[in-house]
Length: 145
Image 1 (cartoon, rainbow, N blue to C red):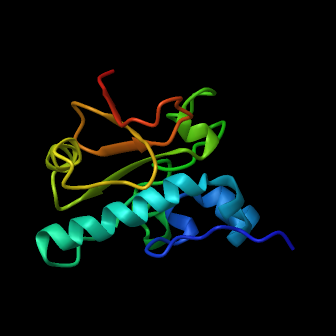
Image 2 (image 1 turned 90 degrees about the vertical axis):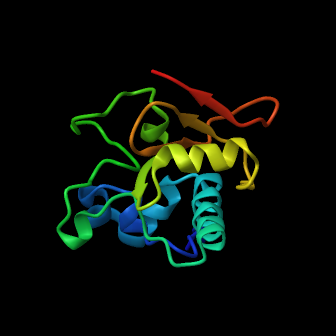
Image 3 (image 1 turned 30 degrees about the vertical axis):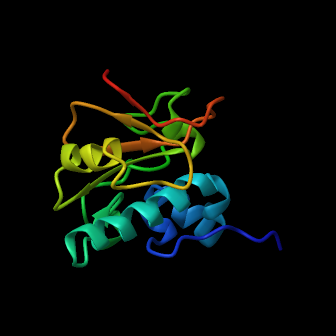
């Protein structure tokens, strides 16, 4: 069997929609970019270090009967699916937590949070969009839609 990369702090059902998890189970890890997983683990660890307590970070929560099913991988037929979105390639996530997203982005800009892989963040939204799209120079970018 092909080995899959897994997260330290997240389960695969947090990165994929319910239909993908029901179809592929743990094999769904093969659909998620390992750089995104490493960045998510690192972000969670650094937030907990900054705030001195456990910080739950939620991507998808459908597994616990929540309403988030398309905040990681997005597939055709889902409301927010776009064929060229980084979500469609397993390279993006939209997470929420008790720390406001702008505060997290400010920590990243101030280099209080350093991620192992370059990333792109969306500004002006109440959630934390992070993606690991292919980039030539390895910088961190912030964008507005």
